[in-house]
Image (cartoon, rainbow, N blue to C red; front, side, top):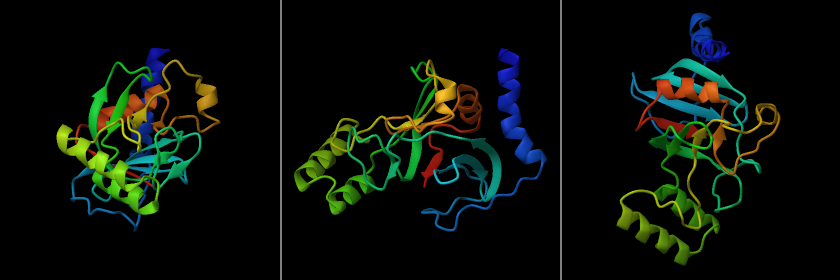
Length: 195
């Protein structure tokens, strides 16, 4: 059975490439990828994760789950929405309760400023965020904006449930074999654009 899961993961990577699947990067990218830069697009409208090398689609992963209450330009801790925007993978936990966790550098300075401007957090919460960010040298995870956002597997959860429902507290979830295959293609510093 384990060999079958591995084969499925490899096919998720190879089939789009072998079939010449073409997908152009979206026109609204908030960054300009380098010619050979590997980056990830999480498209929450089509429920597809695509790995790109520059402007060339390299691999696809279908049917990711997002937050139970969808996505949000700005979010608050506990609202169970997945943040939209540009991030980078900044940590990898191979011992996660969700099988494998590719942590994102959420919330960033842009997230905090946008949340303040939208009224999601007030000025005091914004200043607290800035203070924590400066003190830690990285995005704080315990502010009003929440944290611990990433791409992870299902782990001990129900795969059938995963295939039918957006169920996370704000992360993006794939089946375990899919997140393993994705992890082989990315690393610390890889850009991730969630839209």
